[in-house]
Amino acid sequence: QVQLEESGGGLVQTGGSLRLSCAASGRTLSNYAMGWFRQAPGKEREFVAAISRTGLAKYYADSVKGRFTISRDNAERTVYLQMNSLKPEDTAVYYCAADLLPAPVVAPQGVGYWGQGTQVTVSS
Image 1: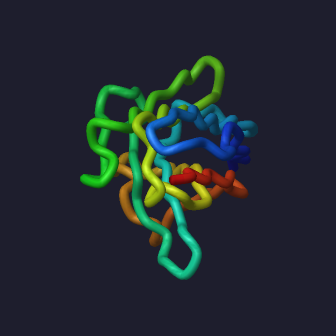
Image 2: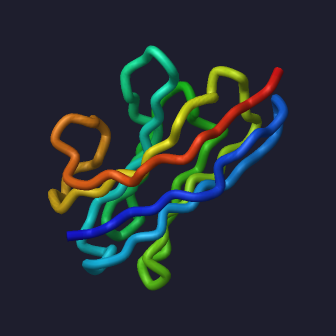
Image 3: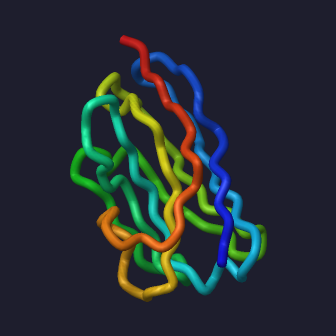
């Protein structure tokens, strides 16, 4: 199995940027499709971005398209989420997710592995 650890969260002003990292240990990262999800207080966990095993295919929620970029470095066993033009509504705990199935990780149901989450707070 794989263990995931997120980092890079913090407090930022509206319009600012953050880069989240998800470090994987255990199994080879290239075996896993990866994704980012977020959960705001009182809301369900929602899809943010996903990337295929090779990094060639990427998927984004409409709410972040054009502002967020997902990438991966399989050699470094790390997945990134570059977040630009942040808005207060982006405030949430951000979770890294991994799954052995080749399908894109775009839904929280059935995800194989989760990180512990990192808090992102965007002030207005």
